Length: 182
Image (cartoon, rainbow, N blue to C red; front, side, top):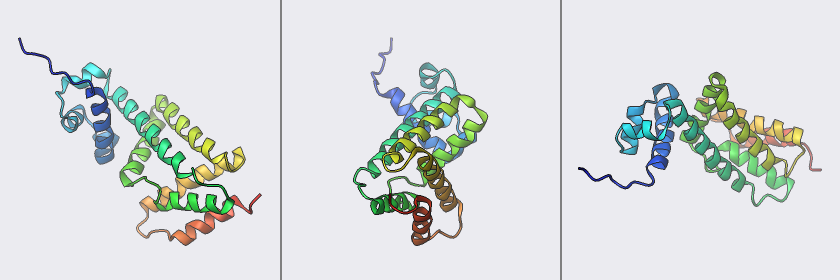
């Protein structure tokens, strides 16, 4: 009888591998086989730990959102003035806040998947609520919602554009959106 390999981190490794596969291949191109290969586990491990590919993707999206929320929050830790807030938001949009192209690719895959799968909307709504809560330390809830949408939209424009949006232009947009210091 073969001895069973002790691998207590296998489920976590599979979820992390799924994040990488989604970033590289998108939701439509993500398969059990690609994830198993990326995690270096037998294919059967996926069906042992997850009820379906949708379940695995949901857990991967949840983990990614949680990780990005920590990065997002830490980006605003040293913001104590209106000017510092403008700079922090500008840096976040411009790409100087710890999120890379793969991180945004996963985010956009999540948004698209959530359009078709209402169960994923709890992940997106929690993530958006967490982002707004960070912003609400500096601005009122309505402005926080608008700034959150501005960040998402400008990052999408920056990511998809063939000509980069200059940092100075992003800063002007952020300043105008936030208005004068209160």
